[in-house]
Image (cartoon, rainbow, N blue to C red; front, top):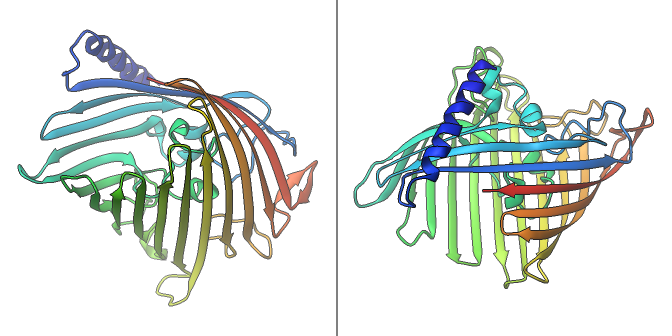
Length: 358
């Protein structure tokens, strides 16, 4: 706690300093705050929503999902970011991280490798290269995150080398990582994980992305290799209508040196309509199939086979302040949810949030 308080004092001092500097100052301070109220009609007594949800997972209480403050430094050949956070999101999603590491949103340093080409090497903790969603809810079309986003890495630690073309239509990067969403390696694990990302923007209205992860997230004595790929496409049809499609698939060895694999996959589609500059709506349909419980374990005969659907309405009070409301439901092959102490196949909740950024 003392370490965290000390870092907060540093952030406050630097914030006061940068506010008095010109716009050309390479040191910039930004922040994000999102509070929410969710009501789960299953009415869980412990106020905790289903375990495969890591964001907005508190029931029947006003809660902080994510509050963070970020310090960024950017020069022609050098860049660095550090951000500290608090809320129900880091409490759940970073539960495996020790000590104050739970409060680190990102902490990285990068430098440019070429004078003529946009090639960078970055090391530290950074947002995941996988998926089109992030913990910053205001930047996502839906209030809550999709099942595939909740159950793939939000963050990662390691080293990445990236190249962006001059016209910024193509990004290619390669990564060496500490594991599947880990700042610290699992004890007994000395197997490096690797990944790639290719993002292609043929026009300003289309984004196509391919990302992967290959590695072992267990001690070497019981090493099981995981192979994972994420694809998504974002298509902005016009100023008012856009849609996103995403697809995750993965395979993991059943046991060490085994040629058999357990697999899982998840498609998602989101449609967004913005009838005015102040109001937007987004509808989502998704499926997550993990029969063998590789990522989401249920202990039931058919594993996690769940359909999800949601509809949210956003009202932009101003450019950096948005009020959102969403209704979301799940329907599962097995009775994996609890309602009044009885297993059931379905779950539904409503949620509202207020998000502010600076």
